[in-house]
Image 1 (cartoon, rainbow, N blue to C red):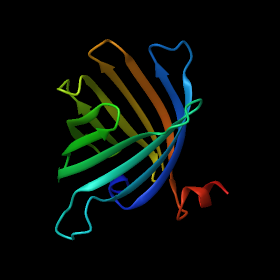
Image 2 (image 1 turned 135 degrees about the horizontal axis):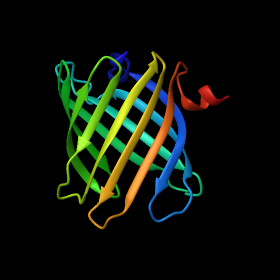
Image 3 (image 1 turned 60 degrees about the vertical axis):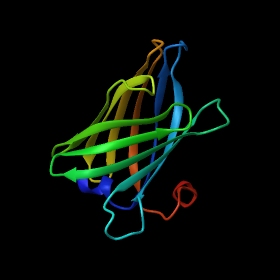
Length: 156
């Protein structure tokens, strides 16, 4: 099952985003594109391009995950975001889950993300981050593999 998240695919999902400065969680939608980092066949790095659309916000949040040194049950990951820059982390894999941890660094936050497979095409994706100012964000999403060529096609 894990292999499907490291193969070229499109995933769509919906969930909730909680922010410590807000009383109620916000609805959030996800479009996740999985691809190779580079078209060079020798470059084995994989990339996730995650676009989160939060209810009430006009601009999506973009996270770019680049995975490298993918070895049996662990990997290196770089998470890039326009708002807070770049964070390096480690990931761990078992038969039905992927976990990533991002220790506090110069980017000013720390956190984790965990993905658990319900089946070959559906995952639960949770995460929690804390900034150096004490602001916390927590998300919980259900994400499904999209068999269509585009998100627009999948939603129509």
